[in-house]
Length: 252
Length: 295
Image (cartoon, rainbow over all chains, first blue to last red; front, side, top):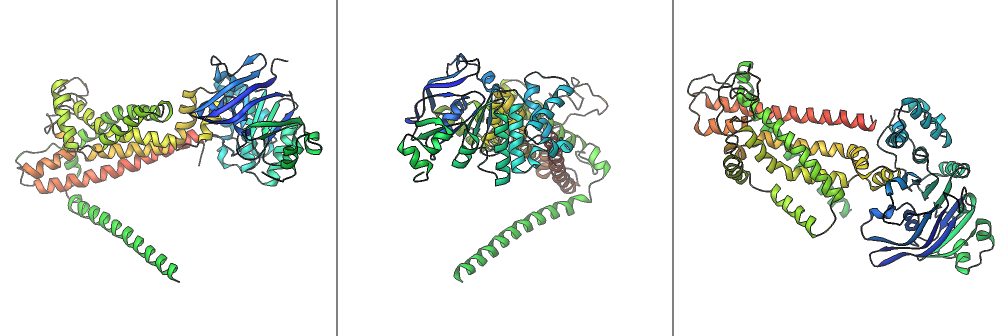
């Protein structure tokens, strides 16, 4: 396994007494898109949020098992969570740009991590905005508030923001479910573009979206990982009956 | 049809209540201003009060009120914001924090005269600060801190949790996330809280009677050495504030024009509170815009 490979081993997440994720072991392919699907409450978002220890914020949440990034188990209590999170970008369902200018939204992270100099920051801002196809739309109003953008633009700004601190992994929690179809298409296009450089894990409720953007798909149900395979196979010839039922819309 | 009627009645009642409140407010303000404004002159605002003669002013009292406000806010705001951040971001949800929260609530509804007596016994006598501006400021801090803590805690809790998560996910430390991402979002509410706290400083009399005192030494407004007893900037001197002065001349004033002075001072007090309110809001908006790049 290479230095940045992401995998989990018997990962369980508990909220108090309730077990939300049950001993899930998964290997994520580098530089590809893995979709997590399943009905609401199946544990897929919880699973995603434990990959960068975001569940630490929820009081009563407890993790068992291991999450490996390269040769490091990030569930180890000695892990430097702050440093860890810098290497893992995250995008939420609801666009959440900082209440700052478009420029500051992107420059804030790298500046905090030690990039000084206006010129380098300018470069990072432009690169990240170009990567997310936002540059041409906002280059003349970088000093305006990020909140003044449309929902789809805000979401792309949030993706650009997470790219600015040079992560290897991108976690996306239903990144398009609050957006209109045109913006959704743009985000999906962007995801296909970004997978050349990043390992992407995306939670989605939209089956077509999973089929369109992902290389591998994992189906979660009631906290269990039911099936995990190439997306093509999952959607045409799943080996488990419940996967087939869910994908063809018979429940969930 | 019935639902519609009920709706109309409810609307009418709400409008009436709102109108009534506006009327009371306007009447109160109008009364104070009409009675007081004609006594306000430059001389009135700057000269010292007279004990038994006509023509005393409120200069030192006005200055004392402002200075006390600054002193109190210097102590209250950092403590209040710090404790508010702790309560909202660091404290675990357990019995102890629930108990602290209860104490804070009880403290905020304490009668101010009791705080004044507490200030007299503890700050003035035990600590030996005497009747002084500093004693007054500390007593007012006791009085204002609970509100400041609660408002800061509340405004930080109202920041969407996604903002905090976005900061942490970028690899920012907890403190950086709080100070650079969350506080700017919460700033307008924190400013409002500070204004409310400051308004109480202007208006408070009971808590100051036994702490900042009811007299003002002869002040020399050309002496700006804070250690000198006649300097207006000396925090260890006794200082009668405007509100205390109004109370004093109304109850035991010997000057023949005491009622006019009280009316004028009341008008000045109201105008000061209004000006301070507008000024603080404007300042808060400027800072908020600067921090958040919003219009």
